[in-house]
Length: 74
Image (cartoon, rainbow, N blue to C red; front, side):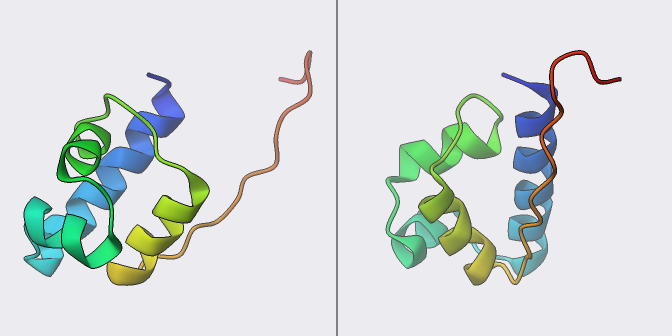
């Protein structure tokens, strides 16, 4: 798992905890399998952009794309 994905998972996890919505309820609200959400929140897998957008919307988060670095850039 990449550091970027782990950081994103952690941010979403914190937002979910603040919202008080449990993993099962969140899975139902965003129509994603509970095990997929659990693995994402634990940093063990990624999610599609569509799934991330639904999660962000439900948790009142804003996804901000980062510019990709080109090979050789610092």
